[in-house]
Amino acid sequence: MKKILLVGASVALFSFAAEKFITMRMPEPTVNYHWNNLNNIKLIADQSNLPHAQVKFIIAAIDSLQKDMQKNARLDSAVAIPAQTALPKKK
Image 1 (cartoon, rainbow, N blue to C red):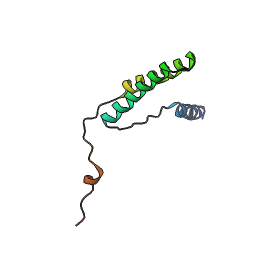
Image 2: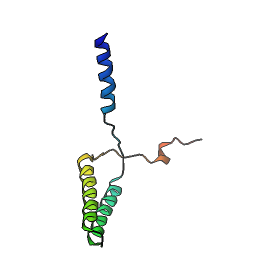
Image 3: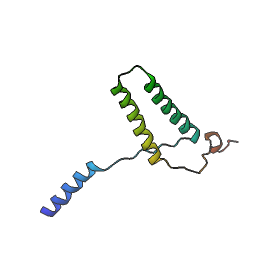
Image 4: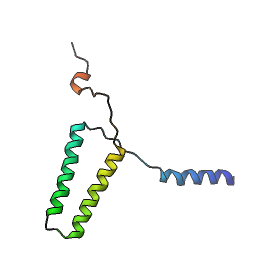
């Protein structure tokens, strides 16, 4: 009985610790567009009249986001079929 309770408790505890992943598929030009926008935001923040601590926070947050994007990005060579051509034509 104790073993069953121990196993049940460990499963319950580990279920809360499981990581969940979100996968997003975007075309490469879209990713490049957003990447460039983030770089532009960093430049604007650096040239702004904001206090130094706020600018450091903004730039660090963007750098962290870009680093995670680079680390987790995967190139999918499969070509997506547009929605209009994916549906069979009605006769």
